[in-house]
Image: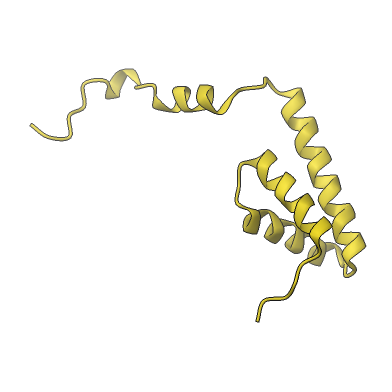
Length: 90
């Protein structure tokens, strides 16, 4: 049976997931893996680690050029010069 998670910890993981554009489970897993690597065992230590990751994500997003998800998608959908005339079917 799945263990019950602390509401505050899950809220921090949700904020981290939102900042990194990943799922809540992935964000929680990242915090759990880093806490295991650092030997953190208590919930308060994991909350502190999650807050540290949130701060790092905010600082990297503020330092780089702020792009909206729509602009990122536009860049990804631009065709390269060598791929412009590619046809999947004849």
